Image (cartoon, rainbow, N blue to C red; front, side, top):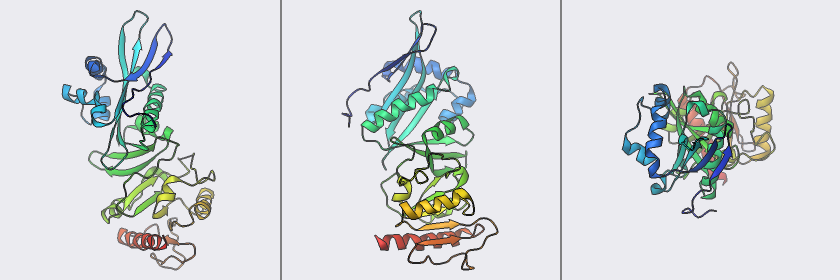
Length: 320
C-alpha cells in the first residue's frame, strides 16, 4: 500500500501533432486553467457535472483542487501544444466518505472524450487502490448516458436513487469489475440482480431498514464473476440475494446454479416471471431449510416482498 502522503506518479504520452499529454496531481495554481475548461463547456455538460448549469464559483474550484486536505486525490490532464502553451482538458478526484469508500468527480473537455475518460479513471483508481480505497461512488443523472457508459465499462452496481432530479448513485470497485459491498454494515444486506439496474421494490425495502445494492445482472454485466465460476463479492457478502433475472431463461438458470454452487449459505429469493405463481401457490412461502430459497410472484406488493426478505435475512443470520 502506498504512503497516503506520497505524490501520484505522472503519466505522459504523445497525442500527435507535436503535443504531449500529462496526467498529474492537481494543485491550487491550476484554478485559472480549470475555470477556463469549465467555461468552455455547454450548459448541459455543466448540469451533468455539477447539477447546475453554470461555472462553479471560485470556492468550489478551490475545493476540487484540494482533495488531499480531506484525504483524497485529484488528477488533471494537461495537454502541452507544440508551441509550449498548455491547458487542462480533464480533471478527476475522489474524497473519502464517512461510511467508507470514496466519492468521485470527473470532467473531460468535449474534444477529448472517448479514450481519455477511461484512461484518467484508471490512473485515479490505481492511486485509490494503493491507498486502501476499495470502492468509488458517484451520483449520476440518469440522462447522463456518457457517464453511465464509463461506469459500465468498469463494472458497477447501483446503491440508491433520487427522483428529483432523477439521479442514480453507482459504486465501482477499484480492483476487478465487480465492486465489494460498500460498508460499514449496520443493517441486513440485500443484493438484487435485475435487468436495467433497478428493482420495483427497492425503495420500500430500503425504507424497511435494509441496505440494498442492485446489479444489472449478466444480460448487461458481461463480466459476471459467478457465471465465470468465481464467487461474486456482492453475493458473498449479502444476507439475501434477490434474483429478478427470469428463472426460465438460460441466463436465469445459470445464475441460480452459480449461487447454489458458490454462495450456498446465502438465501436466494427468486422473483418469478410475470404470470407465474410460486410453487406453494402463495406469494410468501417460507424457504425450505436445505436450499434456503424462496419464490416471490412478480406482481406481489411491497409489504409481501419486505416480509419475505425479513424472514430470509433472519434465516441467514441464524445460520451464521
